[in-house]
Length: 385
Image 1: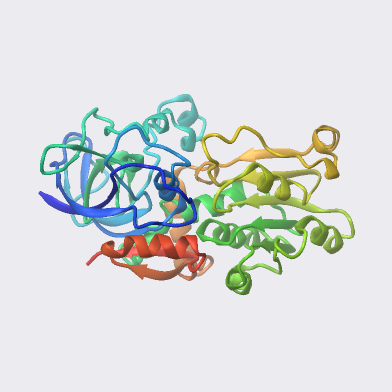
Image 2 (image 1 turned 180 degrees about the horizontal axis):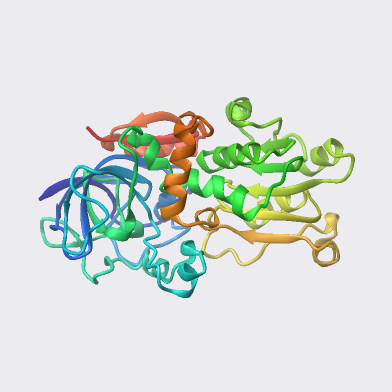
């Protein structure tokens, strides 16, 4: 069958902070679902910065053209052989980490680190071939095995997680990446406890989810650091107690004053691009024995983390028993995180609907990414009829 999809012909632009209309929308031929595969009619897909890292060249996939999109949800249309957990008509979220359930990471509860993730950027689907082709036969890769900025996709069954039909699919889509990654980073990687002081760097979809998580876990003071006034004005809606404009004030000095010199128990970095100096700025806000959790992707040529000399540098890192942690998908399994977050949403304990600040059609995908780069949205979402 034919389907419309947003894709990149190639990667790399002059300015990572401008879209340049580099994403194309066109028709591809979609394969029928084979063994272990599911055909999903996509209804919504979140506009996440990870796809933009491919467009900008900060990250790369190994095969172009590449269909973008990895934060989607939709309705099952057809299933291939050996698919038992969903059937046509089911509502599902799409998980970009299709965990095998058998490797040492899956067996130990770390499904976000499944070995399958090593092939997400290589090009072919897990069966070794492509499910999307141009009219001339050109093979089209699907970013993170999904490529769900598309009307329809055929994906592996392990990328498909059932969700309640009562939940709007634009909300369900967010749990496929941003909401789960942000919330989990604060819950599972930052180990926030009641009464803590938490500093959140960046208030996009991930950052807002991390703030909601810190608030849910009982943090006493939640400081949002973001240069955009519009983001700082929205911070309190998600649970922030203080905000800082890093262009006008040192976050470390603000936190020092706020805590009488003790500093923050943890800092979480979800800025647009994790550059060494920005990670260092976040690190400088953390106390002895505290931790910095980095969530954002870095350019492929980034080879260090700055530990500012004015805060003790590497010496203080060792002597103060500080920690710097990475966080992939929030440090938990999609098959657990997606239904858990949606349950919290249905119980009115997690206002995921506040994350969606603008919706777009597929043909407006470049406008959506421009708005993301300009900081106009917490989370933009492409919706399909």
